[in-house]
Length: 117
Length: 117
DNA sequence: GCTATGTACCTTGCATAACTATGTATTATG
DNA sequence: CATAATACATAGTTATGCAAGGTACATAGC
Image 1 (tube, rainbow over the protein chains, first blue to last red):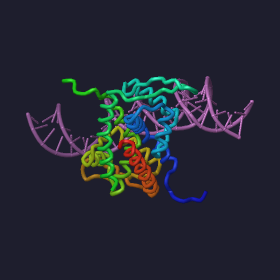
Image 2: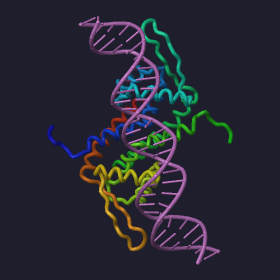
Image 3: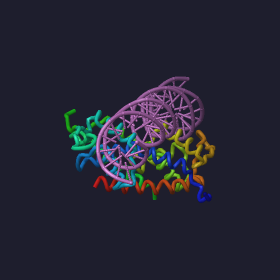
Image 4: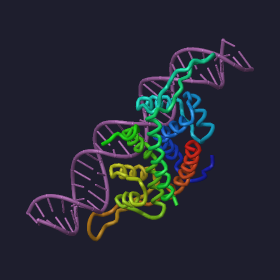
């Protein structure tokens, strides 16, 4: 591979991973606004519509945290064939919390836009 | 205090802290684009112009990490009176890396906007 | 002289969360 | 019958924000 540019690739990779911290919870809650999803489907949904890939080993612990915080609830749904699916949905508290998070995100976005130029 | 809303205040607080992971490095590098800053000044600058507060215990270790990654360099500047200041500036590598980070941030912003609707 | 406040730097230890790797189980496909 | 895709789960590693502590200088008020 030819030397193209002096940017620090490994640093950027780690940075992206760090940016995801917090961001993923926000994304998941936002997606669940519209309708219920099961874990695997949620990952696919996000991958399809955005540039964000959520690893399974990331999502399931995340969903458990959100459940513990009572922001989402879950229920098992048997399938005619195949493995049963665990569907997640926003609780009332989840909706209120998401609203608060949206405010902060908008503020952050504005702040960074201001600094970037 | 009257009960106003069912959102989870502590969760939101922790979440904001998580969102800062990665975000702060991005912010600092962006600020240093324009001109050199010393640590204390950088905190004040960001606080003044945005909604973001960077704790000292966050900034100094962060600057050391950025230095170790050779994204910024620093130099001590003696003052006529008072404590000498450590001024930070972007390196060539820092500039290239920041460019890459900006691309990802734009992408992320777009993705979230899409999901938030 | 003493105290408080503001400036300016630094470090330790804790909590948190993403990711890799690994494991389980079911169904469809070649 | 082996592979891929679906679907959930956990352990261990790593990175980082922040509270809390510290050092040091300068100024203002009592």
